[in-house]
Length: 88
Image 1 (cartoon, helix red, strand yellow):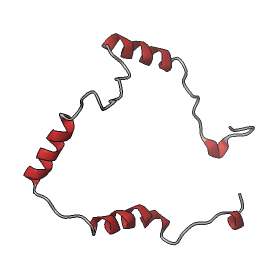
Image 2 (cartoon, rainbow, N blue to C red):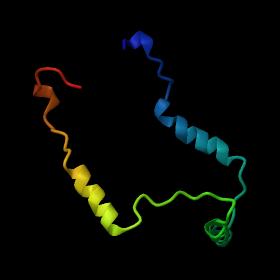
Image 3 (cartoon, rainbow, N blue to C red):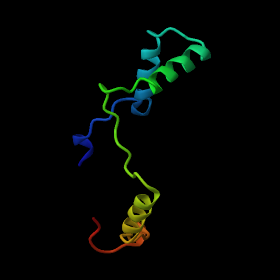
């Protein structure tokens, strides 16, 4: 892409922070105790109407098998500044 094809807003690195700041203007502060109570309600609110995600690995052995399988494919790393040839 050329510079003419790219749109970069002024202070783009601050957009998320600005959005969070603007959103916070409409909130009401709560105490730590109230926050903890709300978190506890969320943790215990799973019932038949919610569909929590199943764990990726049910057992430790499933996790170990996954790690062993994925450790076989390792991407070769090198210095891009001295590399010659196709680079994908």
